[in-house]
Image 1 (cartoon, rainbow, N blue to C red):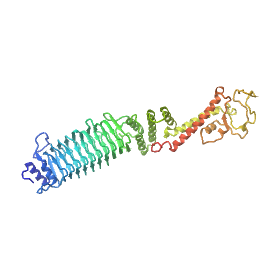
Image 2: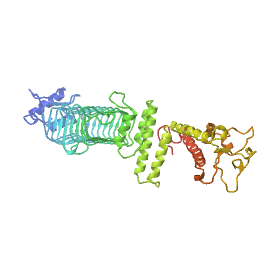
Image 3: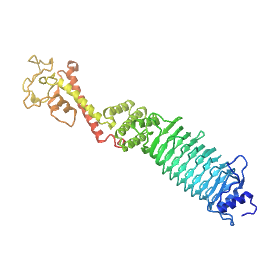
Image 4: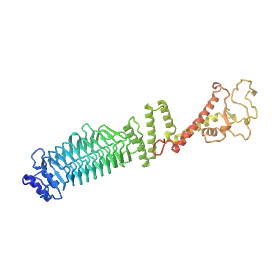
Length: 537
Protein backbone atom coordinates (compact mmCIF):
# COMPACT_ATOMS: atom_id res chain seq x y z
CA UNK A 1 0.00 0.00 0.00
CA UNK A 2 1.42 3.45 -0.83
CA UNK A 3 2.53 5.50 2.14
CA UNK A 4 1.26 8.78 0.74
CA UNK A 5 -2.43 7.96 0.66
CA UNK A 6 -4.80 10.76 1.69
CA UNK A 7 -6.39 10.52 5.13
CA UNK A 8 -9.80 9.43 3.86
CA UNK A 9 -8.25 6.71 1.72
CA UNK A 10 -6.24 5.38 4.70
CA UNK A 11 -9.42 5.29 6.75
CA UNK A 12 -11.15 3.43 3.93
CA UNK A 13 -8.37 0.83 3.74
CA UNK A 14 -8.52 0.24 7.47
CA UNK A 15 -12.32 -0.13 7.40
CA UNK A 16 -12.16 -2.49 4.43
CA UNK A 17 -9.65 -4.73 6.20
CA UNK A 18 -11.90 -4.89 9.25
CA UNK A 19 -15.10 -5.45 7.27
CA UNK A 20 -16.57 -2.10 8.31
CA UNK A 21 -18.53 0.51 6.36
CA UNK A 22 -16.51 3.67 5.81
CA UNK A 23 -18.55 6.85 6.28
CA UNK A 24 -17.49 10.34 7.31
CA UNK A 25 -18.30 11.42 10.83
CA UNK A 26 -21.69 13.11 11.17
CA UNK A 27 -22.74 12.18 7.65
CA UNK A 28 -26.49 12.46 6.94
CA UNK A 29 -28.14 12.66 3.53
CA UNK A 30 -25.81 12.88 0.51
CA UNK A 31 -25.13 16.44 -0.66
CA UNK A 32 -24.22 15.82 -4.26
CA UNK A 33 -24.04 19.50 -5.13
CA UNK A 34 -22.26 20.55 -1.94
CA UNK A 35 -19.31 19.45 0.15
CA UNK A 36 -18.66 15.72 0.46
CA UNK A 37 -15.55 13.86 1.65
CA UNK A 38 -13.47 12.52 -1.22
CA UNK A 39 -12.04 9.04 -1.83
CA UNK A 40 -9.68 8.20 -4.69
CA UNK A 41 -11.04 5.84 -7.34
CA UNK A 42 -7.61 4.19 -7.61
CA UNK A 43 -7.76 3.21 -3.93
CA UNK A 44 -11.11 1.48 -4.46
CA UNK A 45 -9.75 -0.28 -7.53
CA UNK A 46 -6.67 -1.54 -5.67
CA UNK A 47 -8.80 -2.86 -2.80
CA UNK A 48 -11.29 -4.63 -5.09
CA UNK A 49 -8.66 -6.25 -7.31
CA UNK A 50 -6.23 -7.08 -4.50
CA UNK A 51 -3.37 -5.08 -5.99
CA UNK A 52 -1.65 -4.42 -2.66
CA UNK A 53 0.12 -7.41 -1.15
CA UNK A 54 0.11 -5.97 2.33
CA UNK A 55 -3.66 -5.34 2.38
CA UNK A 56 -6.09 -8.19 2.89
CA UNK A 57 -9.68 -7.30 2.07
CA UNK A 58 -12.39 -8.59 4.38
CA UNK A 59 -14.92 -10.93 2.63
CA UNK A 60 -17.57 -8.28 3.17
CA UNK A 61 -15.75 -6.16 0.58
CA UNK A 62 -15.43 -2.44 0.04
CA UNK A 63 -18.30 -0.51 1.62
CA UNK A 64 -18.47 3.27 1.36
CA UNK A 65 -21.31 5.49 2.50
CA UNK A 66 -21.54 9.16 1.54
CA UNK A 67 -18.34 9.98 -0.34
CA UNK A 68 -17.39 11.62 -3.58
CA UNK A 69 -15.32 9.29 -5.75
CA UNK A 70 -12.44 11.18 -7.30
CA UNK A 71 -11.40 9.91 -10.72
CA UNK A 72 -12.47 7.15 -13.05
CA UNK A 73 -13.25 3.84 -11.31
CA UNK A 74 -12.15 1.20 -13.79
CA UNK A 75 -12.37 -2.52 -12.93
CA UNK A 76 -12.42 -3.70 -16.55
CA UNK A 77 -11.46 -7.37 -17.05
CA UNK A 78 -10.66 -7.65 -13.36
CA UNK A 79 -11.91 -10.04 -10.69
CA UNK A 80 -12.99 -8.36 -7.49
CA UNK A 81 -12.05 -10.25 -4.34
CA UNK A 82 -15.09 -8.92 -2.53
CA UNK A 83 -18.40 -7.07 -3.04
CA UNK A 84 -18.44 -3.39 -3.93
CA UNK A 85 -20.95 -1.15 -2.17
CA UNK A 86 -20.98 2.55 -2.97
CA UNK A 87 -23.99 3.82 -1.04
CA UNK A 88 -24.99 7.46 -1.26
CA UNK A 89 -21.85 8.23 -3.21
CA UNK A 90 -21.21 10.71 -6.00
CA UNK A 91 -19.30 9.49 -9.04
CA UNK A 92 -18.43 12.37 -11.33
CA UNK A 93 -16.17 10.30 -13.61
CA UNK A 94 -17.13 7.09 -15.45
CA UNK A 95 -17.70 3.81 -13.65
CA UNK A 96 -16.27 1.12 -15.92
CA UNK A 97 -16.86 -2.55 -15.13
CA UNK A 98 -16.51 -3.94 -18.63
CA UNK A 99 -15.99 -7.73 -18.50
CA UNK A 100 -15.29 -7.45 -14.77
CA UNK A 101 -16.32 -10.10 -12.23
CA UNK A 102 -17.78 -9.07 -8.87
CA UNK A 103 -19.51 -11.01 -6.10
CA UNK A 104 -22.15 -8.25 -5.92
CA UNK A 105 -22.58 -4.54 -6.67
CA UNK A 106 -24.59 -2.01 -4.66
CA UNK A 107 -24.99 1.58 -5.83
CA UNK A 108 -28.14 2.50 -3.92
CA UNK A 109 -28.78 6.21 -3.27
CA UNK A 110 -25.73 7.13 -5.34
CA UNK A 111 -25.45 9.52 -8.24
CA UNK A 112 -23.49 8.97 -11.46
CA UNK A 113 -22.73 12.00 -13.61
CA UNK A 114 -20.78 10.12 -16.27
CA UNK A 115 -20.98 6.74 -18.02
CA UNK A 116 -21.82 3.50 -16.26
CA UNK A 117 -20.38 0.77 -18.47
CA UNK A 118 -20.79 -2.80 -17.23
CA UNK A 119 -20.88 -4.47 -20.62
CA UNK A 120 -20.10 -8.18 -20.34
CA UNK A 121 -19.72 -7.94 -16.56
CA UNK A 122 -20.29 -10.99 -14.36
CA UNK A 123 -21.98 -10.17 -11.08
CA UNK A 124 -22.41 -13.38 -9.16
CA UNK A 125 -24.92 -11.93 -6.73
CA UNK A 126 -27.22 -8.90 -6.84
CA UNK A 127 -26.96 -5.55 -8.58
CA UNK A 128 -28.78 -2.94 -6.50
CA UNK A 129 -29.37 0.63 -7.72
CA UNK A 130 -32.22 1.62 -5.42
CA UNK A 131 -32.99 4.41 -2.95
CA UNK A 132 -33.25 7.28 -5.44
CA UNK A 133 -30.22 6.16 -7.37
CA UNK A 134 -29.54 8.70 -10.13
CA UNK A 135 -27.65 8.59 -13.37
CA UNK A 136 -27.16 11.30 -15.96
CA UNK A 137 -26.22 8.93 -18.79
CA UNK A 138 -27.21 5.51 -20.04
CA UNK A 139 -26.44 2.39 -18.01
CA UNK A 140 -24.71 -0.16 -20.24
CA UNK A 141 -25.36 -3.77 -19.19
CA UNK A 142 -25.09 -5.35 -22.62
CA UNK A 143 -24.28 -9.04 -22.32
CA UNK A 144 -23.90 -8.84 -18.55
CA UNK A 145 -24.66 -11.82 -16.30
CA UNK A 146 -26.25 -11.32 -12.92
CA UNK A 147 -26.57 -14.31 -10.61
CA UNK A 148 -29.13 -12.66 -8.33
CA UNK A 149 -31.57 -9.77 -8.72
CA UNK A 150 -31.36 -6.54 -10.66
CA UNK A 151 -33.08 -3.97 -8.46
CA UNK A 152 -33.68 -0.48 -9.84
CA UNK A 153 -36.62 0.37 -7.60
CA UNK A 154 -37.11 4.14 -7.14
CA UNK A 155 -34.09 4.83 -9.39
CA UNK A 156 -34.05 7.81 -11.73
CA UNK A 157 -32.37 7.28 -15.09
CA UNK A 158 -32.26 10.65 -16.83
CA UNK A 159 -30.24 10.19 -19.98
CA UNK A 160 -29.48 12.63 -22.75
CA UNK A 161 -28.88 9.66 -25.05
CA UNK A 162 -31.53 7.69 -26.92
CA UNK A 163 -31.60 5.06 -24.16
CA UNK A 164 -31.57 5.26 -20.38
CA UNK A 165 -30.83 1.55 -19.83
CA UNK A 166 -29.15 -0.67 -22.42
CA UNK A 167 -29.26 -4.30 -21.30
CA UNK A 168 -29.39 -6.27 -24.55
CA UNK A 169 -28.70 -10.01 -24.12
CA UNK A 170 -28.39 -9.64 -20.35
CA UNK A 171 -28.85 -12.84 -18.33
CA UNK A 172 -30.42 -12.44 -14.90
CA UNK A 173 -31.03 -15.54 -12.82
CA UNK A 174 -33.20 -13.73 -10.31
CA UNK A 175 -35.80 -10.98 -10.63
CA UNK A 176 -35.85 -7.51 -12.14
CA UNK A 177 -37.42 -4.82 -10.00
CA UNK A 178 -38.13 -1.54 -11.78
CA UNK A 179 -40.93 -0.48 -9.47
CA UNK A 180 -41.73 2.02 -6.72
CA UNK A 181 -41.36 5.27 -8.67
CA UNK A 182 -38.74 3.96 -11.05
CA UNK A 183 -38.32 6.86 -13.50
CA UNK A 184 -36.66 6.94 -16.88
CA UNK A 185 -36.13 9.42 -19.66
CA UNK A 186 -35.00 7.50 -22.67
CA UNK A 187 -35.66 3.99 -23.88
CA UNK A 188 -35.29 1.00 -21.56
CA UNK A 189 -33.68 -1.64 -23.81
CA UNK A 190 -33.85 -5.32 -22.91
CA UNK A 191 -33.43 -6.89 -26.35
CA UNK A 192 -32.95 -10.63 -26.09
CA UNK A 193 -32.71 -10.51 -22.29
CA UNK A 194 -33.16 -13.70 -20.24
CA UNK A 195 -34.74 -13.32 -16.82
CA UNK A 196 -35.07 -16.29 -14.51
CA UNK A 197 -37.73 -14.76 -12.27
CA UNK A 198 -40.19 -11.87 -12.57
CA UNK A 199 -39.83 -8.47 -14.19
CA UNK A 200 -41.83 -5.89 -12.25
CA UNK A 201 -42.48 -2.39 -13.61
CA UNK A 202 -45.24 -1.58 -11.13
CA UNK A 203 -45.60 2.16 -10.31
CA UNK A 204 -42.85 2.96 -12.80
CA UNK A 205 -42.81 6.03 -15.03
CA UNK A 206 -41.30 5.20 -18.41
CA UNK A 207 -40.81 8.19 -20.68
CA UNK A 208 -39.25 7.47 -24.02
CA UNK A 209 -38.67 11.15 -24.67
CA UNK A 210 -40.32 10.92 -28.07
CA UNK A 211 -38.96 7.42 -28.68
CA UNK A 212 -39.99 3.97 -27.45
CA UNK A 213 -40.46 3.84 -23.70
CA UNK A 214 -39.36 0.19 -23.54
CA UNK A 215 -37.94 -2.12 -26.17
CA UNK A 216 -37.71 -5.71 -25.02
CA UNK A 217 -38.03 -7.62 -28.29
CA UNK A 218 -37.10 -11.27 -27.91
CA UNK A 219 -36.95 -11.15 -24.11
CA UNK A 220 -37.51 -14.43 -22.26
CA UNK A 221 -38.99 -14.35 -18.76
CA UNK A 222 -39.42 -17.51 -16.72
CA UNK A 223 -41.77 -15.76 -14.30
CA UNK A 224 -44.18 -12.89 -14.89
CA UNK A 225 -44.02 -9.44 -16.49
CA UNK A 226 -45.91 -6.77 -14.57
CA UNK A 227 -47.06 -3.28 -15.57
CA UNK A 228 -49.42 -2.57 -12.71
CA UNK A 229 -52.05 0.11 -12.14
CA UNK A 230 -49.56 2.80 -11.08
CA UNK A 231 -47.41 2.45 -14.20
CA UNK A 232 -47.15 5.38 -16.61
CA UNK A 233 -45.85 4.81 -20.14
CA UNK A 234 -45.13 7.64 -22.55
CA UNK A 235 -44.04 6.10 -25.82
CA UNK A 236 -44.25 2.74 -27.52
CA UNK A 237 -43.79 -0.48 -25.59
CA UNK A 238 -42.22 -3.02 -27.94
CA UNK A 239 -42.57 -6.60 -26.70
CA UNK A 240 -42.22 -8.33 -30.07
CA UNK A 241 -41.48 -12.07 -29.73
CA UNK A 242 -41.36 -11.80 -25.94
CA UNK A 243 -41.87 -15.09 -24.10
CA UNK A 244 -43.44 -14.85 -20.64
CA UNK A 245 -43.92 -18.19 -18.92
CA UNK A 246 -46.18 -16.76 -16.23
CA UNK A 247 -48.50 -13.76 -16.06
CA UNK A 248 -48.25 -10.83 -18.47
CA UNK A 249 -50.01 -8.13 -16.47
CA UNK A 250 -50.69 -5.05 -18.60
CA UNK A 251 -52.59 -2.50 -16.50
CA UNK A 252 -50.84 0.88 -16.83
CA UNK A 253 -52.77 3.86 -15.50
CA UNK A 254 -51.46 6.07 -18.29
CA UNK A 255 -50.51 4.70 -21.66
CA UNK A 256 -49.66 6.65 -24.78
CA UNK A 257 -48.21 4.77 -27.72
CA UNK A 258 -48.39 1.31 -29.22
CA UNK A 259 -48.07 -1.93 -27.30
CA UNK A 260 -46.30 -4.25 -29.76
CA UNK A 261 -47.18 -7.85 -28.91
CA UNK A 262 -46.75 -9.41 -32.33
CA UNK A 263 -45.35 -12.96 -32.11
CA UNK A 264 -45.25 -12.72 -28.30
CA UNK A 265 -46.15 -15.60 -25.97
CA UNK A 266 -47.58 -15.52 -22.46
CA UNK A 267 -48.94 -18.11 -20.06
CA UNK A 268 -51.63 -15.84 -18.59
CA UNK A 269 -52.93 -12.47 -19.78
CA UNK A 270 -54.45 -9.67 -17.68
CA UNK A 271 -55.42 -6.14 -18.67
CA UNK A 272 -57.87 -3.31 -17.98
CA UNK A 273 -60.07 -3.80 -21.05
CA UNK A 274 -63.59 -2.82 -20.00
CA UNK A 275 -65.33 -4.68 -22.79
CA UNK A 276 -65.63 -1.54 -24.92
CA UNK A 277 -62.43 0.47 -24.34
CA UNK A 278 -59.25 0.68 -22.28
CA UNK A 279 -59.60 1.87 -18.69
CA UNK A 280 -56.55 4.13 -18.75
CA UNK A 281 -55.45 7.59 -19.77
CA UNK A 282 -53.86 8.39 -23.09
CA UNK A 283 -54.39 7.03 -26.57
CA UNK A 284 -53.57 3.35 -26.19
CA UNK A 285 -53.13 1.05 -29.16
CA UNK A 286 -52.14 -2.59 -29.32
CA UNK A 287 -50.70 -4.93 -31.95
CA UNK A 288 -51.91 -8.51 -31.43
CA UNK A 289 -50.64 -10.19 -34.59
CA UNK A 290 -49.71 -13.75 -33.69
CA UNK A 291 -49.84 -12.94 -29.97
CA UNK A 292 -50.61 -16.15 -28.09
CA UNK A 293 -51.50 -16.76 -24.49
CA UNK A 294 -52.96 -19.76 -22.71
CA UNK A 295 -55.59 -18.22 -20.42
CA UNK A 296 -56.99 -15.07 -18.90
CA UNK A 297 -56.22 -14.20 -15.31
CA UNK A 298 -59.14 -15.24 -13.10
CA UNK A 299 -59.87 -11.82 -11.61
CA UNK A 300 -62.97 -9.65 -11.41
CA UNK A 301 -61.35 -6.82 -13.37
CA UNK A 302 -60.40 -9.03 -16.33
CA UNK A 303 -63.12 -9.38 -18.97
CA UNK A 304 -62.86 -12.89 -20.35
CA UNK A 305 -66.20 -13.32 -22.17
CA UNK A 306 -66.38 -13.74 -25.93
CA UNK A 307 -68.29 -10.51 -26.54
CA UNK A 308 -65.84 -8.30 -24.67
CA UNK A 309 -62.81 -9.93 -26.23
CA UNK A 310 -64.22 -9.71 -29.75
CA UNK A 311 -64.51 -5.96 -29.25
CA UNK A 312 -60.91 -6.07 -28.00
CA UNK A 313 -59.75 -7.77 -31.20
CA UNK A 314 -61.74 -5.45 -33.45
CA UNK A 315 -60.33 -2.39 -31.70
CA UNK A 316 -56.80 -3.73 -32.01
CA UNK A 317 -57.02 -4.92 -35.62
CA UNK A 318 -59.16 -2.14 -37.07
CA UNK A 319 -59.73 -2.73 -40.79
CA UNK A 320 -56.95 -5.32 -41.01
CA UNK A 321 -57.66 -9.02 -40.90
CA UNK A 322 -55.26 -11.35 -39.12
CA UNK A 323 -56.63 -14.82 -38.24
CA UNK A 324 -54.14 -15.57 -35.44
CA UNK A 325 -55.74 -13.45 -32.69
CA UNK A 326 -59.17 -14.94 -33.40
CA UNK A 327 -57.82 -18.48 -33.40
CA UNK A 328 -55.93 -17.99 -30.15
CA UNK A 329 -58.96 -16.44 -28.44
CA UNK A 330 -61.13 -19.35 -29.57
CA UNK A 331 -58.57 -21.81 -28.22
CA UNK A 332 -58.41 -20.02 -24.85
CA UNK A 333 -62.20 -19.94 -24.52
CA UNK A 334 -62.50 -23.59 -25.48
CA UNK A 335 -59.86 -24.57 -22.91
CA UNK A 336 -61.90 -22.69 -20.30
CA UNK A 337 -65.02 -24.67 -21.20
CA UNK A 338 -66.63 -21.81 -23.16
CA UNK A 339 -67.44 -23.79 -26.30
CA UNK A 340 -70.27 -21.46 -27.31
CA UNK A 341 -67.98 -18.46 -26.98
CA UNK A 342 -65.27 -20.21 -29.00
CA UNK A 343 -67.75 -20.90 -31.82
CA UNK A 344 -68.84 -17.27 -31.75
CA UNK A 345 -65.24 -16.16 -32.11
CA UNK A 346 -64.75 -18.54 -35.04
CA UNK A 347 -67.87 -17.18 -36.71
CA UNK A 348 -66.71 -13.58 -36.26
CA UNK A 349 -63.31 -14.53 -37.67
CA UNK A 350 -64.91 -15.74 -40.91
CA UNK A 351 -67.09 -12.64 -41.10
CA UNK A 352 -64.00 -10.48 -40.71
CA UNK A 353 -62.26 -12.55 -43.37
CA UNK A 354 -65.14 -11.93 -45.77
CA UNK A 355 -65.20 -8.19 -45.08
CA UNK A 356 -61.48 -8.02 -45.70
CA UNK A 357 -61.79 -10.07 -48.91
CA UNK A 358 -64.53 -7.78 -50.20
CA UNK A 359 -62.41 -4.69 -49.56
CA UNK A 360 -59.23 -6.27 -50.88
CA UNK A 361 -58.37 -6.09 -54.55
CA UNK A 362 -56.46 -9.37 -54.43
CA UNK A 363 -57.74 -12.56 -56.03
CA UNK A 364 -59.57 -13.36 -59.24
CA UNK A 365 -63.10 -13.29 -57.85
CA UNK A 366 -64.97 -9.99 -58.17
CA UNK A 367 -65.98 -8.29 -54.95
CA UNK A 368 -69.66 -9.01 -55.48
CA UNK A 369 -68.95 -12.73 -55.79
CA UNK A 370 -66.86 -12.68 -52.60
CA UNK A 371 -69.65 -10.91 -50.76
CA UNK A 372 -72.27 -13.35 -52.03
CA UNK A 373 -70.18 -16.39 -51.11
CA UNK A 374 -69.60 -15.10 -47.58
CA UNK A 375 -73.19 -14.01 -47.08
CA UNK A 376 -74.49 -17.37 -48.32
CA UNK A 377 -72.24 -19.40 -46.01
CA UNK A 378 -73.06 -17.11 -43.09
CA UNK A 379 -76.81 -17.25 -43.69
CA UNK A 380 -77.05 -20.99 -44.29
CA UNK A 381 -74.64 -22.62 -41.82
CA UNK A 382 -72.81 -19.77 -40.06
CA UNK A 383 -69.55 -20.66 -41.87
CA UNK A 384 -69.78 -24.13 -40.36
CA UNK A 385 -69.97 -22.94 -36.74
CA UNK A 386 -73.78 -22.96 -36.60
CA UNK A 387 -74.89 -26.09 -38.42
CA UNK A 388 -78.35 -25.73 -36.86
CA UNK A 389 -79.04 -23.00 -39.41
CA UNK A 390 -78.90 -25.62 -42.16
CA UNK A 391 -81.48 -27.72 -40.31
CA UNK A 392 -83.67 -24.64 -39.85
CA UNK A 393 -83.56 -23.85 -43.56
CA UNK A 394 -84.34 -27.47 -44.47
CA UNK A 395 -87.29 -27.46 -42.08
CA UNK A 396 -88.55 -24.19 -43.54
CA UNK A 397 -88.30 -25.56 -47.08
CA UNK A 398 -90.03 -28.76 -45.98
CA UNK A 399 -93.00 -26.80 -44.63
CA UNK A 400 -93.20 -24.43 -47.60
CA UNK A 401 -92.99 -27.33 -50.03
CA UNK A 402 -95.63 -29.20 -48.06
CA UNK A 403 -98.04 -26.30 -48.46
CA UNK A 404 -97.33 -25.78 -52.16
CA UNK A 405 -97.42 -29.45 -53.10
CA UNK A 406 -100.56 -30.06 -51.07
CA UNK A 407 -102.32 -27.22 -52.89
CA UNK A 408 -101.06 -28.54 -56.25
CA UNK A 409 -101.85 -32.18 -55.51
CA UNK A 410 -104.32 -34.48 -57.30
CA UNK A 411 -107.98 -33.57 -57.32
CA UNK A 412 -108.99 -36.51 -55.17
CA UNK A 413 -106.68 -35.25 -52.37
CA UNK A 414 -108.16 -31.76 -52.43
CA UNK A 415 -105.50 -30.24 -54.67
CA UNK A 416 -105.68 -28.39 -57.96
CA UNK A 417 -104.53 -31.35 -60.01
CA UNK A 418 -101.23 -29.80 -61.14
CA UNK A 419 -99.32 -32.78 -59.76
CA UNK A 420 -100.25 -35.88 -61.72
CA UNK A 421 -99.05 -39.48 -61.91
CA UNK A 422 -95.60 -39.72 -63.43
CA UNK A 423 -95.67 -43.42 -64.35
CA UNK A 424 -97.37 -44.33 -67.70
CA UNK A 425 -98.96 -47.41 -66.19
CA UNK A 426 -101.19 -45.13 -64.19
CA UNK A 427 -103.28 -44.01 -67.16
CA UNK A 428 -105.67 -46.92 -67.69
CA UNK A 429 -108.64 -44.85 -68.89
CA UNK A 430 -109.11 -41.49 -70.58
CA UNK A 431 -105.51 -41.37 -71.68
CA UNK A 432 -105.88 -38.07 -73.53
CA UNK A 433 -106.57 -34.75 -71.94
CA UNK A 434 -110.17 -33.61 -72.38
CA UNK A 435 -112.46 -30.57 -72.32
CA UNK A 436 -116.01 -31.11 -71.13
CA UNK A 437 -115.62 -34.89 -71.44
CA UNK A 438 -114.68 -34.70 -75.13
CA UNK A 439 -111.25 -35.40 -76.62
CA UNK A 440 -109.04 -32.42 -77.49
CA UNK A 441 -108.74 -31.32 -81.06
CA UNK A 442 -105.17 -31.00 -82.41
CA UNK A 443 -103.57 -27.80 -81.04
CA UNK A 444 -106.33 -27.31 -78.48
CA UNK A 445 -105.38 -26.56 -74.81
CA UNK A 446 -107.39 -27.83 -71.82
CA UNK A 447 -109.05 -25.16 -69.69
CA UNK A 448 -107.85 -26.58 -66.32
CA UNK A 449 -105.97 -29.45 -64.74
CA UNK A 450 -109.05 -31.59 -64.24
CA UNK A 451 -107.77 -34.40 -66.46
CA UNK A 452 -109.40 -37.77 -66.00
CA UNK A 453 -107.33 -40.79 -65.10
CA UNK A 454 -107.64 -43.85 -62.96
CA UNK A 455 -104.93 -45.49 -60.87
CA UNK A 456 -104.41 -49.12 -60.06
CA UNK A 457 -104.98 -49.94 -56.38
CA UNK A 458 -101.28 -50.59 -55.77
CA UNK A 459 -100.20 -47.14 -57.04
CA UNK A 460 -98.46 -45.03 -54.28
CA UNK A 461 -100.98 -42.53 -52.86
CA UNK A 462 -99.95 -38.87 -52.99
CA UNK A 463 -98.99 -36.98 -49.80
CA UNK A 464 -97.90 -33.31 -49.86
CA UNK A 465 -95.69 -33.73 -46.78
CA UNK A 466 -93.92 -36.89 -47.92
CA UNK A 467 -93.57 -35.53 -51.45
CA UNK A 468 -91.88 -32.40 -50.04
CA UNK A 469 -89.54 -34.51 -47.90
CA UNK A 470 -88.74 -36.96 -50.71
CA UNK A 471 -87.78 -34.22 -53.15
CA UNK A 472 -85.90 -32.18 -50.54
CA UNK A 473 -83.45 -34.74 -49.16
CA UNK A 474 -81.19 -36.25 -51.83
CA UNK A 475 -80.46 -39.49 -49.97
CA UNK A 476 -84.11 -40.18 -49.12
CA UNK A 477 -86.30 -42.25 -51.52
CA UNK A 478 -89.90 -42.57 -50.39
CA UNK A 479 -91.26 -43.33 -53.88
CA UNK A 480 -93.23 -40.07 -54.05
CA UNK A 481 -90.92 -38.22 -56.46
CA UNK A 482 -90.87 -41.16 -58.85
CA UNK A 483 -94.66 -41.58 -58.82
CA UNK A 484 -95.81 -37.98 -59.02
CA UNK A 485 -94.67 -34.80 -60.78
CA UNK A 486 -96.11 -31.41 -61.80
CA UNK A 487 -97.53 -31.28 -65.31
CA UNK A 488 -98.36 -27.85 -66.78
CA UNK A 489 -101.26 -27.87 -69.24
CA UNK A 490 -99.62 -25.39 -71.64
CA UNK A 491 -96.09 -24.94 -73.03
CA UNK A 492 -96.09 -21.20 -72.26
CA UNK A 493 -95.90 -19.86 -68.73
CA UNK A 494 -98.49 -17.14 -69.42
CA UNK A 495 -101.07 -19.81 -70.38
CA UNK A 496 -100.57 -21.77 -67.15
CA UNK A 497 -98.70 -19.59 -64.63
CA UNK A 498 -99.73 -21.65 -61.58
CA UNK A 499 -98.66 -24.93 -63.14
CA UNK A 500 -95.29 -23.58 -64.20
CA UNK A 501 -94.80 -21.90 -60.82
CA UNK A 502 -95.17 -25.26 -59.06
CA UNK A 503 -92.84 -26.90 -61.59
CA UNK A 504 -90.13 -24.23 -61.21
CA UNK A 505 -90.44 -24.32 -57.43
CA UNK A 506 -89.95 -28.09 -57.51
CA UNK A 507 -86.64 -27.60 -59.33
CA UNK A 508 -85.61 -25.01 -56.77
CA UNK A 509 -86.80 -27.28 -53.94
CA UNK A 510 -84.63 -30.15 -55.19
CA UNK A 511 -81.50 -28.03 -55.77
CA UNK A 512 -81.84 -26.21 -52.47
CA UNK A 513 -82.20 -29.54 -50.72
CA UNK A 514 -79.00 -30.82 -52.30
CA UNK A 515 -77.02 -27.69 -51.40
CA UNK A 516 -78.32 -27.29 -47.84
CA UNK A 517 -78.04 -30.99 -47.04
CA UNK A 518 -74.45 -31.09 -48.28
CA UNK A 519 -73.44 -27.94 -46.39
CA UNK A 520 -75.10 -29.12 -43.19
CA UNK A 521 -73.37 -32.50 -43.35
CA UNK A 522 -69.93 -31.03 -43.99
CA UNK A 523 -70.51 -28.51 -41.19
CA UNK A 524 -71.36 -31.30 -38.77
CA UNK A 525 -68.39 -33.42 -39.83
CA UNK A 526 -65.98 -30.47 -39.53
CA UNK A 527 -64.91 -30.33 -43.16
CA UNK A 528 -65.61 -26.61 -43.32
CA UNK A 529 -64.00 -25.82 -39.98
CA UNK A 530 -61.71 -27.56 -37.51
CA UNK A 531 -62.20 -27.76 -33.77
CA UNK A 532 -59.27 -25.42 -33.16
CA UNK A 533 -61.06 -22.73 -35.09
CA UNK A 534 -58.89 -22.87 -38.21
CA UNK A 535 -60.16 -23.33 -41.72
CA UNK A 536 -59.36 -26.66 -43.29
CA UNK A 537 -57.24 -26.56 -46.38
